[in-house]
Image: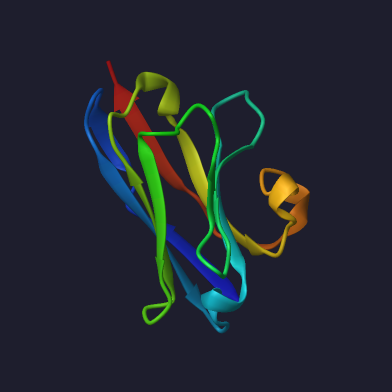
Amino acid sequence: VQLQASGGGLVQAGGSLRLSCAASAFRSGDYGIGWFRQAPGGEREGVSYIRSGHSTYYADSVKGRFTISRDNAKNTVYLQMNSLKPEDTAVYYCAAGRPMASAWFMSSMYYYWGQGTQVTVSS
């Protein structure tokens, strides 16, 4: 079971990036996929989550700017990040699990994790 996160990079404030989370050895459609981020010295925080049934959830800090989606045929989940801010700078991780909707942001609810991709937003 493997998750591969990609798409990070350096972007100016106001710019956009699209992260991808590709799953192998299992069907990502059987799981919910969450995106988390961790800034230097900070705790890992939930950013967004998409259930196997396509319901979506977002942290208040990214609502209206980030969009999560999934392509089950490609076994891939995407995080489109627009209007990026310097405070979005972090390592972004994707994870697979079946958390309750009320607990999607809890990292302990996930079984599998990707390796992380760095997002840096300059001011």
